[in-house]
Length: 186
Length: 177
Image 1 (tube, each protein chain N blue to C red):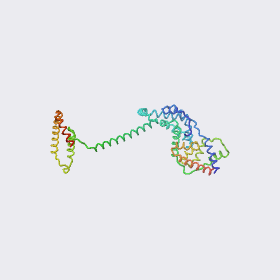
Image 2: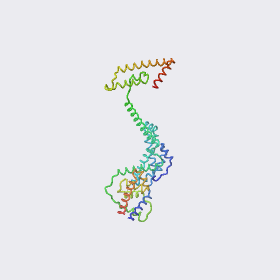
Image 3: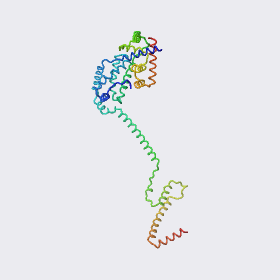
Image 4: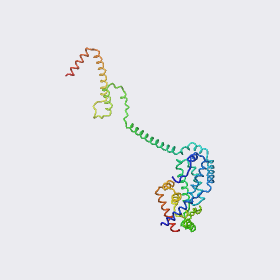
């Protein structure tokens, strides 16, 4: 299962029975995880928040369909990724890549002096955005889930509804593309 | 390539550690609950009744059981239909015998055989039979009369011991010859 979120089975069952107050508690627990994935894929805080909100509504509408509480995490990530995926497809693809010198300088600064301090969210967004600019929405989603969220290929395959071979192929292409950019600009 | 790999790993490590944080999860929760409450109040009475009556179909194992039951019933229905069709075909292939002759009181085996011959005779061609319908009728009548007479004769023999003895002796003689 993907990065397990610790939720009591009881709370999920109460939500399935229609308890909105328990669903409120559930949202507070799971929304940070959903936000992390959405933010890393979309690299936009406001859009990520909107996706989290939409995800929670979809989750409420479909929570009765969840067969077992064990599959809840995979179900949640699947909704988030599908919504992000749709959002990415709606975005206009930039005709050509424009390297942002400031961001590259920032990345260089962070890794050259072994600067292990955490980067701010806006910077994270900039870096991910730049590294994944040339990737397709699917490749981007696979890269974020596998390399940033550290999920296994099997989990990503389950979440995205594609085969493991397909996950591997997309991940390979994404890594290769990002490595080439690092080689070229850093 | 190793340098690039190292840089890639460093960037990846940096991004992994900088996990995005949702600052106000509570407000998202409030917004969602408010929206859901609004939607709930919009739900019409018939929808509520339908949800109350059929909401249980969302339960996974119930749904799977229903699907399995539907499949079994469909297969049984198909099987039954095939069986009925087969029986109808068999029935239509059978000969219908609706002759009042069959229903008459047939006295013994010989009469039966004659009757059968008579029924079959209707279907025989002129080349295959030389007995006319009238002759057959006369034959049956004479056999019936003969059988009555024989019965009377048997009763007579049974009632007279001397005659019975005589008949038995004659029968034994004829068997020995």
